Image 1 (cartoon, rainbow, N blue to C red):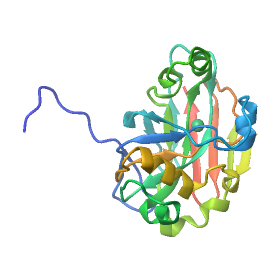
Image 2: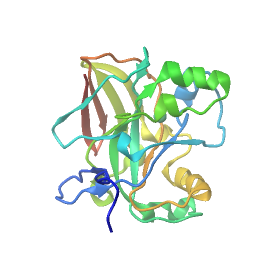
Image 3: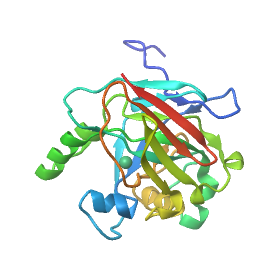
Length: 231
Ligand code: MN
């Protein structure tokens, strides 16, 4: 087969302790999945989960022990960090039940759902799609994927983010409103999951702005750290 121009390379994420990389298909994100973050955004209660997407090439894949770079994006004056547990799907499927969901998971990673909050808020106000606030280039930094067998009990792991050495976000994955299995059940009722899909599971409270020169260090117990500098 030949193409009218060279197709882009497959987007991929390193795998902890392996030479082979995880090829990325789609990036799904869960909105408002920690109660205290829902509250800081002006919402309360356990609403049904909702989803948005980022393009696969929004990934900034950061190797273990390295510092990734994220260029400060255009159009915004309020770029926010959202530290998130990322679930990497290894086996696809649709209408997956929560109890069966774990069989579909390849591994887990630390990710950042970087958000142009001012643009997202304007779109929310007007009832328009969030794409311009969420789905831009370099908006999905991610560290290496830890395969399930080596990841430990991520459902009860501490999740945190520091900026310039100061705590910004600190919580526990156990506080997810919709846990990993429930999220996969809801998501796979709407879309057929494919190997290579990534699910950003939502952020705890403490989201705030970053500026060029800031260094973000995200951690989830058992999954290591993700370090990203805003340039
Ligand atoms: Mn998010």
